[in-house]
Length: 493
Image 1 (tube, one colour):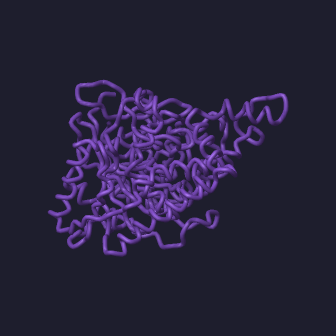
Image 2 (cartoon, one colour):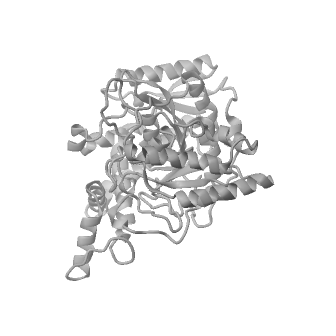
Image 3 (tube, helix red, strand yellow):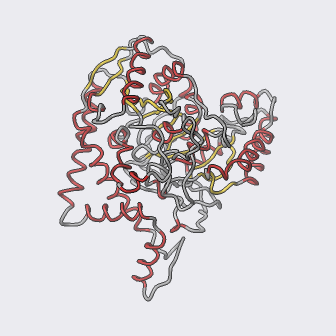
């Protein structure tokens, strides 16, 4: 990690504005780090070096004129789910082979408008379906963290594993990510980074490859809370091309960092104390509670009674929406085409060759629960459960709770190719046990690094907020960050 790549976004921005460094120098440092180390991590699947240099040179021109944007000259990695004009955008799936969109996603457009520099496209679980970044057509991403005394390769979490690993290994200053059931917060917890899943509708979904449209939401992964706040301010916007985006002013999120939490009510939900929860997770949660007590916050025990139904309901709603969204990939208009005897045979062969096992599994589940004989029994019932989960949160917030504190994940990072996970998909799905409720209710959530487990691997705490009150999450999350400190992996690469 060079001196320049170890700068946070906030620090780099200050140096750029003071003309102590140039955007080209900063970009070259990151490109050098990627060239030297990406083979170890498989975080980037496409590096856009020429485009990055061009953008950085333009940033230096604007900096010289005093016309800098909020992210002027800051090099970022972009998850392969975001459409980037004339650049590889394949959701890490074989079925989108060779696809280069002629348009730009709204989120990435916002970033470029603010002067950010694109280093390349980041690896992810295929179509964002996974919790370990092992379902990618381009192979798994390797976590920069290793257990003490071990050289075993660990997963970075998923689906935004490439984003989390690249930020943790200092291969970008920050990264875009998406969260459908925990795909920002879980990898952030596994890599010692900060991940923010904003309120549904805070960031436009236009130009982002769809998984489950009523759950998907873009957000940042960054090295610390301030950087995450800076990124979210640029990513968020209303968008006439996405009718689910909300027309509310985008606050200066960073201004809430450092404000006192004295008198703030922090809810502790009893339902998150799940069976067989590791002692280390419970201990970390208790530590977080003490940090808030010491900061003057009021700790309140709360109940979210329908939490136990969240995971099964999620794994009905999300696959149902996925089966509908992924019907468009048929080999006719773009991407992979496998020739067949007739059009039906071509469809079947293309989809069979193009989709990976996990995506096929979810399409099959989704198609089944939407079928005429089972729609009421499964999909309709899951949507009713979703309403009850949302009402649980509404009641708690109406009773005066400002934010809710929970663990982010049920464990630290596990090994790539873990046999138990591979043999039992449900065991893998349980990684999202603390995160899916937030998506089901459309709420904002943040994962903040809070400590290390007995193996020296990072663990995160999650804060859940009221709709469009991300500022409260940054304010409250700062307490954990200040108490726990920042975490970086010991360099082995």
